[in-house]
Amino acid sequence: MKKILALIMLALPALVLAQEIGNYLVMNDIGEYKFRPKRVVTIGNAGVLVPTGHFPGHGDMTYEGIYIHPQTYLGVEVKITQHVGSDSDKWLLHEVDRDFRTYYGIPGEIYGPKQIDGQTILEAFAGGGNYRWLSGNKVIMIEYQDSQLTKPEPLEIVKTYLAKHPSSLSPISLAQLRSAENKTKWIKDEMDRRLWLCDKWEAEFQLGKVQQKDMLQEQVKSMEVFLNYREKYYGMKAADEKNLLNGYLSQNNKTAIKNKLDEYKQWWSANKNKAISVP
Image (cartoon, rainbow, N blue to C red; front, top):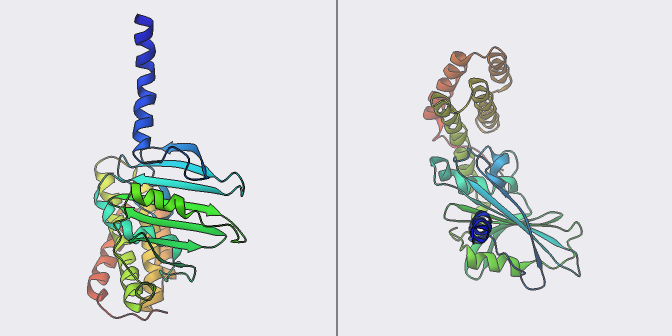
């Protein structure tokens, strides 16, 4: 009896984990697509938003799986990140479509909104397909590779996940997405976000959660993006400022970097509402 109880206790963590993953992934075949589990990425990873500079909540969880079509050999990857509801989540919608825009925030030609079963998602096609949406503070990404774009879209997988994780995106037309108003808002939001990230890293440093060197590197990285945008849309040369920042970084000069951040914040407060010209 004790042996049986011991086996049950050993199995409990796996059972609990499977149940937890099942809250996010569809852990069975979908139509002709065969489900294959992939991996679970745990604390400190922001999933698909990592390249955007997203500041992860402590406890963000990413769940991944893949579905294989046995005839076409099309592999469809699903990645779902449950964000914990930290203050950085206010940027989720802004960050979700970052990969679909140019460096300077202009929507790509292959990118647009799509309506499926009355719900709005974002999609892009280049060497395959990429579908994204928010469901509350969850980010859902479904992606596949097809360099010739000859294989059928895996819409049954998209629809199944929309049923499990309904989109919370508001309807938007392609014309609205490509409007000067939308572009301008996204650009200014990115400049706002970059200064916000600098403050966020400072707060984490004050709490003893990050090292000063890491904080300064991240602050300079975000300030350089801010300066590039300022040069592009406000006509202020960035090279000298970036050289100064990197010099301060090499000296580990926290005070000088903080002073520059305060200077940029003051400039942004005075100039944020000015009109800019976008392509």
